[in-house]
Image (cartoon, rainbow, N blue to C red; front, side, top):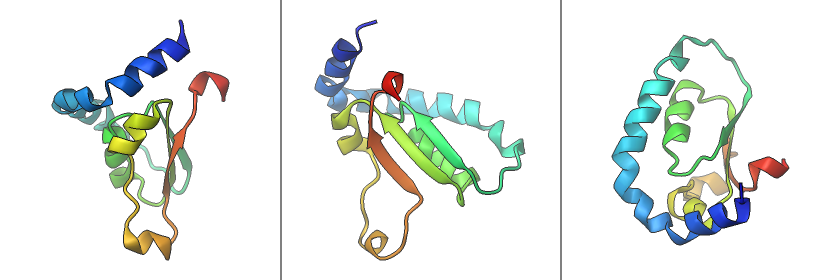
Length: 106
């Protein structure tokens, strides 16, 4: 699999992913509906291929005290759909971080 080619395709087509948002959200809700039965306290969660930030929103509802690391290899997708830095996050620690990295190299 050519990771550089896939990364280039996702970077070029980041704006077009909006049309699939509803489908991704429905699949994420189905998968993560089973997560509520897990009893985590405070952990570090990795969202590999965070993409549209849908899974992260759902995970942060269930595990609001956990550190959530959202990793995607497309910088353009992270810019469009990543966490927006709010004014109060400058003064209070946040528990979600967007990271641009290739999962295969971690």
